[in-house]
Amino acid sequence: MASMAVAEGMPAAGLVFLGYPLHPPGKPDKVRDEHLYGLTLPMLFLQGTRDPFASPELLEAVVARIGPAATLQWREGGDHSFDVAGLKRSADDVGASLAGPAAAFLRAHG
Image 1 (cartoon, rainbow, N blue to C red):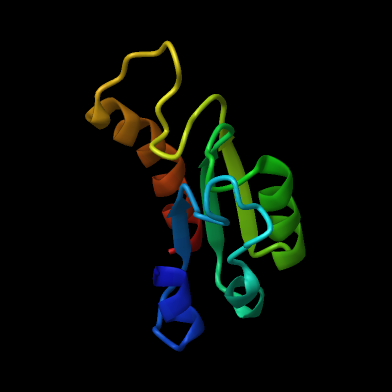
Image 2: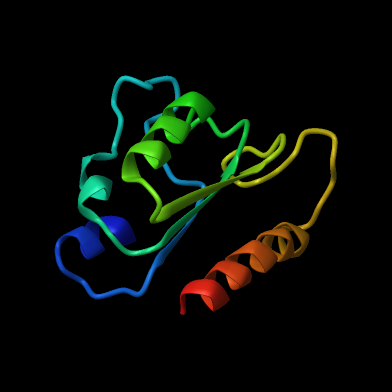
């Protein structure tokens, strides 16, 4: 939603995506990416490798097409909520694991 608002003119210094919903689960042919290509602000995509909303190969292609403004960081084994099978973590722990990369991105581009 935020990226669509920015594409329509809402001011922003950058975007951090926590599990970008590139396509509906099981429907990689319905990609939601067109509005991203006109954005020139810095973008960070934090994504789980098992997220059913974004197959790795499709998201990597989108980020490559966006160009140097976009950075993609994978969370190995993470699903859309960044839960990893067999690893019990609280929501606070999951959030804390994402805070470091997000904060570093904000410092670098803020």
